[in-house]
Image 1 (cartoon, rainbow, N blue to C red):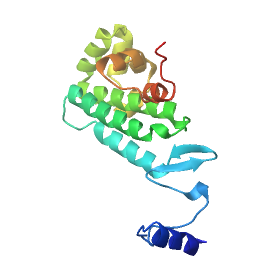
Image 2: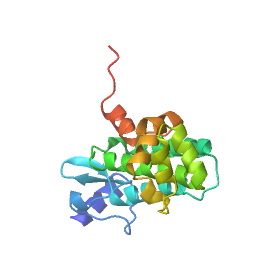
Image 3: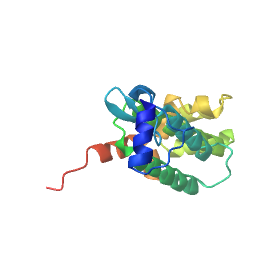
Length: 184
């Protein structure tokens, strides 16, 4: 089978074939330019998703000494570019989880940046948390990743607040491409 296809591409279409990269496989095993098939739907391959998460981890690293404005700009640029490339993907299942994960990582960045308990308390109170809850949360010895999941931190650094700061939503970008608003 491969010999026939190779001969056709080589002799008839005059295309050069790289025998190391070329193979004939079932569609479930096919990965091409970061895409694969999941049943009858086109999806990004696992390797592409792993690279995306790795890159987002770099942009949301807690010890990356850049301003949050710069961090948001770099994140937006990368996420929008990645989603525009993989917009053909019809695979929605991991999108909400990725969105939650991204917001949690950004909450970690804020928690790490605030550093001292008095600073954490001051910021939590300014974001609408009662003083008692702010003190209880701010003096906790738990790490940023654990604290980013607490209800008080999630209420203070809400999804809407993060969006207002400039955090792009993966889910909104995916929906915008697949279900564009009608112009009528």
